Image 1 (cartoon, rainbow, N blue to C red):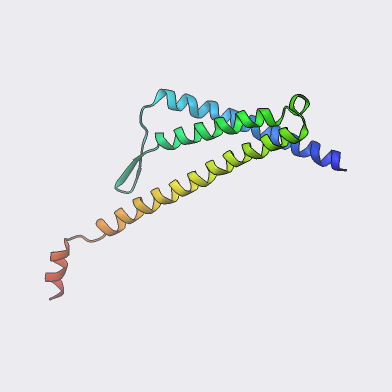
Image 2 (tube, rainbow, N blue to C red):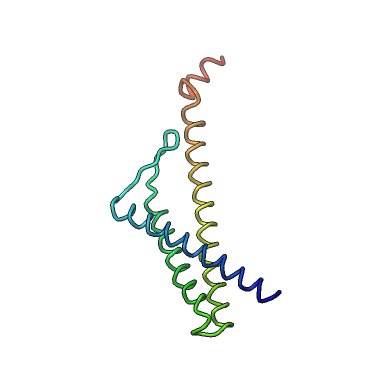
Length: 131
């Protein structure tokens, strides 16, 4: 049963690795074609190329260590297991960074549009209207 579980885990890692390599190829081709990609959220706009660069670097490390992790027949089971864990760390780090940057961008974009542009007149206009 342990052999079956190990085989299933290895199969999942192989599929995940192929998926990441495919996305890595797509992101790399997008990156090569663009020096900047501006995305607007409300009145704020952001260049997402640095996010793509971060993803490409972290996924490249993931792919490199996963190749070593799937080379159990060449480097041994314990070392390949260690490489698989390192590769999962890079993938997880990428997800955490992207979630953090996405939330930060949303907050900055949302609050700049609601606080700066929600009132039809300036703060002094509001003071004069309340008196």
